Length: 447
Image (tube, rainbow, N blue to C red; front, side, top):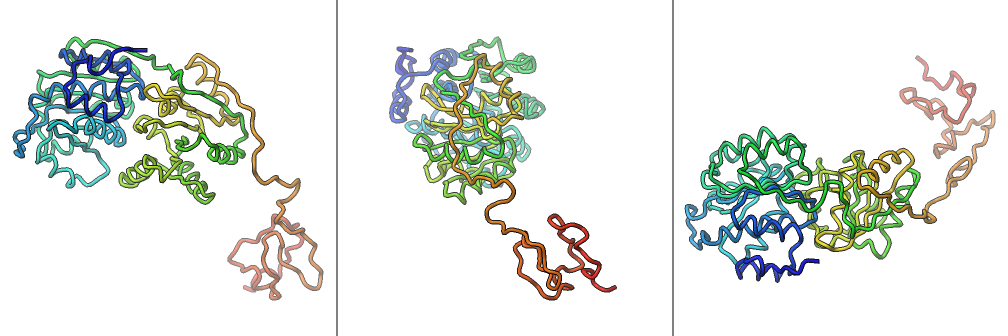
């Protein structure tokens, strides 16, 4: 374990004070390596998974370098954009800017976050007032550039956070447009979970002899995360999930699904069962997603159902548990999902519910992380048992008497004497439980 403290990294007293108030005393490996290099002015390529403390690795030295230019003046001209941080998702943008605000609270430096999904008019006044640090998603930043509400000609530091994710999401053309507008003399930092050939090519285009540091391989899952698997039939997943969520160690849980539809349905079903749950996915408005995330952080929502849109963007302090209701088809996404827990040295639990048709994806995950995941014994599930032939609430079907045909008891409808009106001709006749011979021609209305 490192014996280096933040004070040893030559950070200013006001920054150290904010770190102490936030409960941070010892830098993580990525922070210990990156902060001195950034302070010395090097361009940097840093390989780090989410949960390693990479936001502070660039935010703290950035604040330190901008401190001499901090001003209490209210003039926007005294607060030009000096640091630009580009991120792939709205959620990550919000988290990064929240962290910067926390670290800078005892300084005069201003920060702002801009992203799509909300009215751009609400962001313009803040930009016009001036900010030194701007966190942005590429698309919304280009919107502001086109509307001339932001200038980038004074940018001294550029950060690309989760660069691999940005390229996966198709942001390369936007990035190139933005990079062309920046001063050539600047410091550039890139943080990425993986370094593909495309990432390396991008670094050659906008970085000057970058220093490479890497604290974890792209396939490394944190050792402080207890990973477990339950082999379970698909139809039994909900019962098992409900049982896990009622455990003492499930005080705050993110549950991952593959699709938006499953996330919404699962959240609603859990709500009906008395679980404080909500969903966050791409079909939600930005306001709805922010409200759900804030409620989860504050504890009024204890279970957050999320698709992979949230896998790399959520930053929850001390999240104890992640559950994969459906495991991802891409093994790398599993590593990013479980990286929501066990952050910055804390312990966490990652549980996966794997049905028979998902076993091949589990094998891919174990091959990627280079170790087997422990199989847990499936507990007795508290769920209604199926009767051999019919559900308990169904009444037994009796053959109707010739003189007074009864309506099909399977559909639980009262007897209607007028057969001609019992089943209107405009409705399809329900014949699943009756032989076709029992539906006479007189059931049809006369033409």
